[in-house]
Image 1: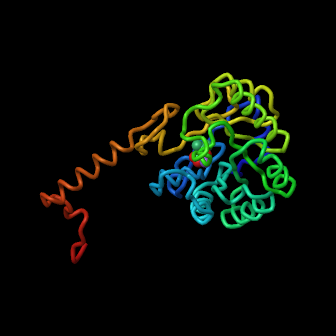
Image 2: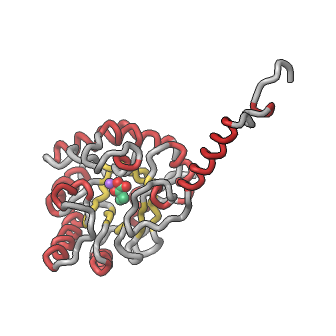
Length: 266
Ligand code: KIV
Ligand code: NA
């Protein structure tokens, strides 16, 4: 089967809902890939994989290492890599340099970066130079130090107007799609109906053109989850139960059995 392409993702708007999940490792990528249109190597790996307090400390090296693993573990979905904080904001040239490194080292099809109007020139610069960019507006976790937390955005009229202006700016700049995170629902609907590219919601609206969740959140594997997460499995329970059984069998010497040991002659 051939891998999906960025133009195919763009064309899905108004036709089929787009399915996106995060993946950080090869085995997770292998398991999620057949079911997804896009796999996002999110900088949420900072908290989920590395136990960091936010996505701010995440580095290009981390994104490249995990991105390459996810590309190796997938054959169907479009793989996108988050640009980490500090790797793209200073100038379009800095962003191009970082994004080119990401694509060269991982084999991914495109990058994602956070920000609206302020990032529009950067999105146009990369798009014009062969690098597809997914945008990310609304609640932008890399700006946590400025936002003061992870609460929903768009409750005041000023915030609402700003988010809509951000959406229009990055759509016009050539983002091939963008994530709308943590905004009050009617804003997500209004944006989805007024931009040319697909919108991917997380804590946004069922009427977005697609949805994304952090895989560990929907699998019940991560311990701190937002209101917008739906749990589709209890992986924490499964892993805890397995570890408990293993520990008991080691302690009462019922593991390993002859099945798991080597006889001198078979
Ligand atoms: O880092 C991430 O996982 C993300 C998605 C939740 C959109 O940016
Ligand atoms: Na992210």
